[in-house]
Length: 67
Image 1: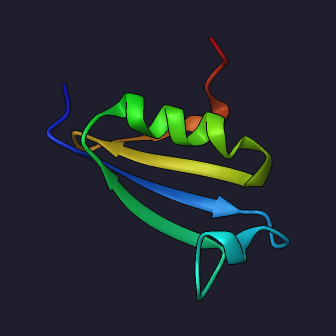
Image 2 (image 1 turned 120 degrees about the vertical axis):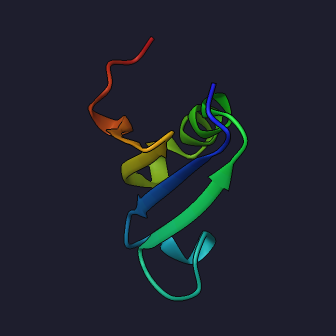
């Protein structure tokens, strides 16, 4: 299990104002991978890409198959 997960989200240009004041990329820290997945599921329609650093391993969540 990860100590924490840092996820970098890229939002669609027409939705970015909901999540950021400055740009289309936002970095957030989570306690568990499951929290990142829940965020992605909730805001799927606003996301372009998600990259996560899980214990030093970089993973593109948008390239993962849905469960």
